[in-house]
Image (tube, rainbow, N blue to C red; front, side):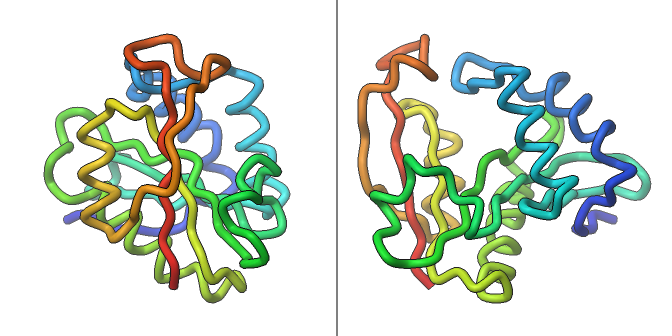
Length: 166
């Protein structure tokens, strides 16, 4: 039975291992220092990780930054609104296309008002159609696409930012 819950601090090392095992692909930018930063934010309770487990097996998770930790480069999309930034959504390969990613996004949307947010932001490689579909299914709309040579070294090398207003 698949369940969703917030990760405990003691589980962060397991999540990081899972990310580096199941996350690398041409679409993802996973620099070690950036991932370490995200997990430090979770440990400081400035971000959260929502886990998906099937029995006792981890099958996916999402990391979302709380509004006061919104990265500066996303302020242009939130304006004066308080926003949650969804940094990672990862589902184990064998469990993809079962709605787990969509459910993770929906549960973060449900939690956003409790964090004082009125908007959610997420980004993806412009050509990552699976992520685009998952995000659209959850209600996200495209806000901007831009050339992102620092993070993208594959395909169009563009990032698409998507938003969801509560």
